[in-house]
Length: 302
Image (cartoon, rainbow, N blue to C red; front, side):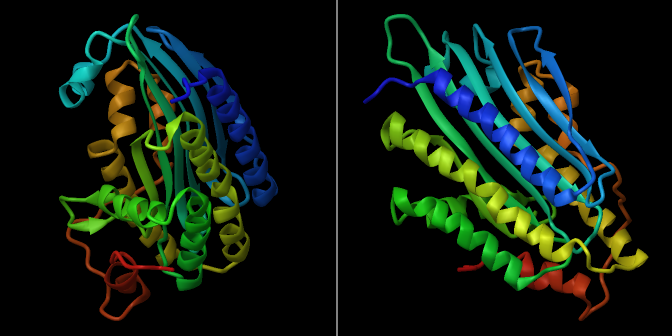
């Protein structure tokens, strides 16, 4: 098995951040990402890019981070005892886009590489990531297009890849306390090294490179649609689910906070405006009811 090339992964991730920011800025038309470089006290750092109050994107963050340390946090070695006593490096690009128009779905993507090393022993490494879509008003065409793009990104790496990681996404982005999925899914994978370094890296690149082509055409189709104040309020209510998932279940958020990551960058995925309402129920037969009854039910989209 070929040895991991950490520098090649890092250079790819930096170029991916550049590419995604360019494509999103072009789709927004007005907003620009502002960069904030930071250093982590325990080792490493990153560059956060945030776009606020664009023409289309109310808040978007595209974050690159590369952190390292001499030992893993206890939470990680609990699940992976083989990591104990190893130094580690974790690098990735993570992003969340919250559009202002409730007809445009929120999207999230992440690709990352992890490696733990110890002198005299083989390194332990893997890739992880994926992307998922969170609509406020369901649109069958968008869901099918999103999943078709994800399926095509997986196709060169084996017939079982898309169905496996689509199912994993459905199961991962699930709010257990609400008994409902966060969105309509996409791809999720972790601990991925089964194809050897070169092919596993190629797969991660395929996923990373397909995110903007999956999302930008959906923005383009929906960004000029009119919406009511009631629909905007429903969007803010549903954003609450996003916040609940990120703060209670998300692995990346928890890992970042437990390893002394930069809080501003870790929490940049949270929307700028959100609301909760006690025991709110949609009108039967409404588009709001259709979201949970039809679109947020795991199914085969393609």
